[in-house]
Length: 312
Image (cartoon, rainbow, N blue to C red; front, side, top):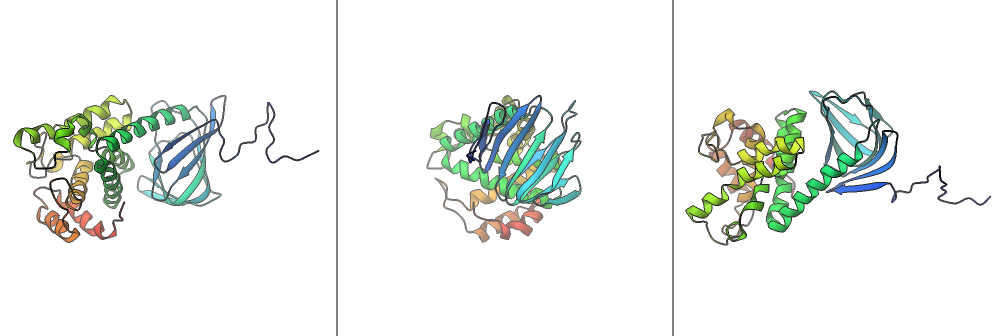
């Protein structure tokens, strides 16, 4: 009998790396549904270095979830505990009772098995993320790359400040989509090459409230929670910010982190109305505003990490 590289029948399916029932991509993450039957699904994941993926508990959820690492290296965090998953090793939970965040120390692939249908929900949420990301990029190319930098550096600070996994999840989405409300700002104001007048500035300030509303409208729990960061990332520690004039610890910690990283990135980037400052100038300004505009603990953590920030 002749051997074929790929052999399939009505009941036996040979699945190549390029095949699968369905595939969805988001940034540097690719999910491929390999098999689905009677409530059990097998999903192949590709996760690029530095990117994160998570398992989170759901009310009324009592399913088996299983992760088997094929290649690369995954660092995982559960509460105060941390661990490393090497190729050939697995994690199993029945059910997941607390948020587990996996971060790829290098490009990684793994198999995820669940005893219930999850891929459709995965794909729908991912499509919503992708749609929002594309809208940001089309509205303002600066905002697209800016948001990726804010997300990456905010998570570095959040981890150093020992935020719990749920806070890190909200920070991840809130940092990336912090400026999503700019979709509702007229182009002639958002892209104006000169400084804004008072009326225009009052309009652009509304992007914080618009951002919360847009994220809430998705119906995705993590995006709804991230709306707090979108709304508060222009609040200031001394109460001088907007939209509500919150101060101190009234401000969400994730929003306080994004406020510092967002300001640093804006200072060191060329804008239509302002040339970029040097890295040292930006750091000096943030240091001077410690305890007035910015949360002291966030500034201290930022200063301890800023020299390690990579260009994105």
